[in-house]
Length: 116
Image (cartoon, rainbow, N blue to C red; front, top):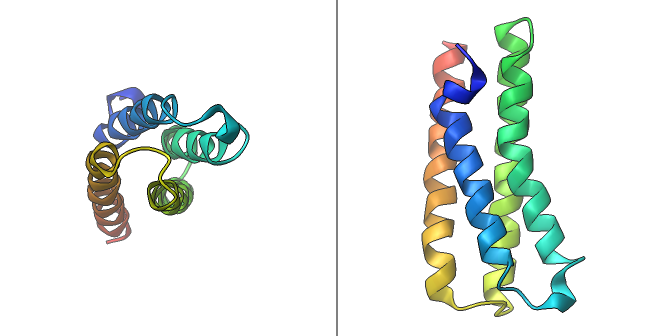
């Protein structure tokens, strides 16, 4: 099985795509600020899932899932800040914030299942 077939990797890629689309609407003055930070964090999530999947042991994979979870939490924080400073309307932020929140639960659950 390839990492590309994993639900969590696919979900992470979709979040990254949605973040790119979201940040396209940000002011150009944010290109090197929150736009860049959000994109980096979003891309880091599926990237770490893929990298961990290619490791030799399950413990290594779990470690990379923890790193992906950390990046997801960074992303959540950055999205909240962007929303609060008014970079785009709350209606646009709400679906992606909910998606990130649900995915955090999925990642935590996956990590717990793999540890048991």
